[in-house]
Length: 183
Image 1 (cartoon, rainbow, N blue to C red):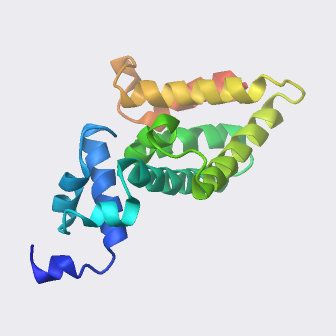
Image 2 (image 1 turned 60 degrees about the vertical axis):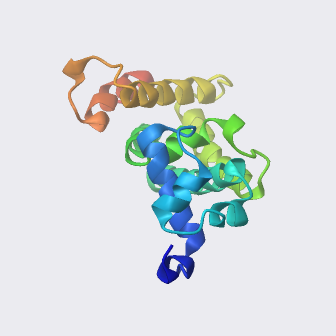
């Protein structure tokens, strides 16, 4: 290991970036802390020093993921149609984070940063779904399930090929029909 690698400018950020890249390539289980250290150009002990263990690192990825997810949903505005499209866009643009945040068995779900980001994101989803179907207590879960299911199916390549290669364009008619948004 070079002296430059040992004196890394932002070791935590470098290990996080290596983890996100590894998750994007092989999923949340397909790598080790030692591999991430190699990728980041840091000592093999550095990830454990900063995160404790793989669960600690995945907790940090989940916290970052929920913060990014909440920001993306909030930026979409009050129209749940736009929030639904932002959901799909986030899944595609931040696949590694998306792969982790909805798998709470991978991280410490009671971590304060994870909880804060999750609550922000869920507040946007819940309020948006309530605006579409006021008074229907099942609406938030139904809306979330449809949009999440579409995102998962898109990421897995399980949707019909005739939908094309633009996830937002493919999601638009699904979300429009679900929420009866006039076209």
